[in-house]
Amino acid sequence: MAEIKLTQLSHGGGCGCKIAPAVLQSILADARDKTPFPDLLVGAETSDDAAVYRLNDRQAIVATTDFFMPIVDDARDFGRIAATNALSDIYAMGATPIMALAIVGMPVNVLPLETIRAILAGGEEVCSAAGIPIAGGHSIDAPEPIYGLVALGVVDPAQLKRNSGARAGDVLILGKPLGIGMLAQAMKKGLLDADGYQALINVTTRLNKVGSELAALDEVHALTDVTGFGLLGHLLELCRGAGLGAALDLSALPVIPAVRAFAEQGIGPGAIERNLQSFAAELDMPDSAPAWQRRLLADPQTSGGLLVSVAPTAAAQVLQRFHAAGFAEAAVIGQLTTGAVRVVAR
Image (cartoon, rainbow, N blue to C red; front, side, top):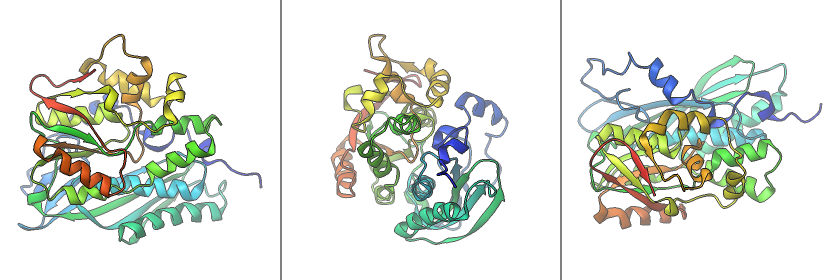
């Protein structure tokens, strides 16, 4: 059998598969109101990373699900990326994962069984690194490969980090460099070399465990992770939840080294344009700024970095926590401001 490229079996890949933000908002327009359950601490109200249900004064269950189609051709790497991405939502709430369930949809008449086993093994490898079991799951025969997890975690309600808790004057810190969607598209076009591919894997399989540590810091007011709606979209979710604006320093944004050349050529997934169309009215960026920078802000990040809103007095401490955990590229990228909900990028 000729080698099967996983990315050729799907119409999209990674978090770039997400429904366009504007379309999703329309679909969920009638489902945003919080249901009358006082122990449901976080639902769908602010598009947060996971649902949270209080069990008692010291414990709450954090639940999320995330799955997508292949972003890379290597089966094990696909499984690792999908699992890392799913667990990120737990860490983005300041929680600690306790177990996961696998979500598996595979074209069983197309993919060899050893390929499917390798995808699942990649997910198991990541969960083992996170110290949790994959305790079960569900599988279907699907026309395109789909893999992901239902992830469950626990958090002390007093240390829960919503995406709506940001305060004016907070510093914004991003934990991982940008450009994942652009690199993935370059790979799909056969333009990504071995070093670029390794950089893609290194970023997307790095667990955001540091989120659990940051939960203990009172000066950390909000957390989210940057995924399919790009830095722009997820920052705007944080801004809407808090009723604030944001100022971004474009020169401070961490970027995967191989990305800029592809960005300047206009290479990137179609989700970039969908994201820009959804958020253009809330972005203030000089006309003189290069087009690739605007597109980078909307690039869908699969298993992207944590975005932290922290009091200025604790920014250095948060950066130190990131760097000690292996996130060498973590950087201060801006600040939250009073005023209209919009991102000013300079």
